[in-house]
Image (cartoon, rainbow, N blue to C red; front, side, top):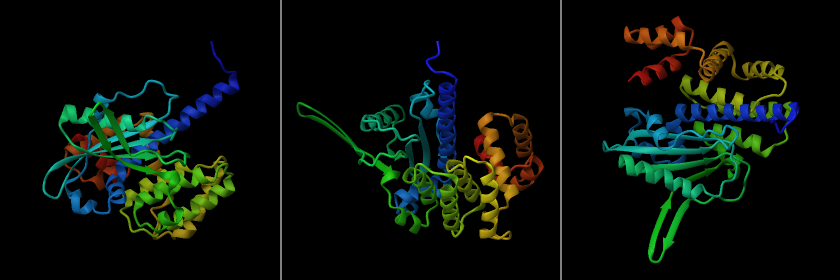
Length: 315
């Protein structure tokens, strides 16, 4: 028996859909700028990690330890486990735990310790652990788990990045791409409720800052897509207006182009809906026949970054 009328069911469906969209957005952006996130959290990251050796995401290993939640309406969590190499050649693991919806959960410390203990128990890997909190709660969240009983004590500390508590001025000063992600999330948190006019001002302000950064094209795709989808207009016609204003700001010679941007969006949506299996088969076949990423991208009408993701997954 339904507990909601039609309006209530539509609300629940919309809320669930919004959560799924943000879930997918965070999964993508964490992979696309994982190195920049580490640099953002640790200014010495380039001295510690050898990013030229690549980053390997261990989704299967993590899912074995923590199966996805079956309750689709429950607060969403995105976890990324990655393998990197340090400058001295040591293999190390990095865990990013992201509370996508940001609901306040008192058991965060215990949950963070559970992540560490299960990973260490099964794989024997010490990890750098970071919790990203995206919700509106301003109360400082704990960064340690302590358990003590009759002289036996356990203390575990981890890193916490709470977006709601960050300074807009400091984020605007940052030259790190992850600062743009944090600004997009913070803008929504700090300015609710928002109408489309206010959203337009926010998105254009972020775009002006973002376009001053010298970034690889694939990171431009990723961050622009995140910003456009995370801060979304109620009236879809405003997306067209925003694109036109964006073109005026950038100038056509400096922009990736609206067509390319739309292509990137179609790719992301296709991944979410699982409707590009046939195209993937073509790409995989061309990869196996030693075609370059640029040639494959043109033949399959996708971006080189998308081809590179498939190539990496095959390896």
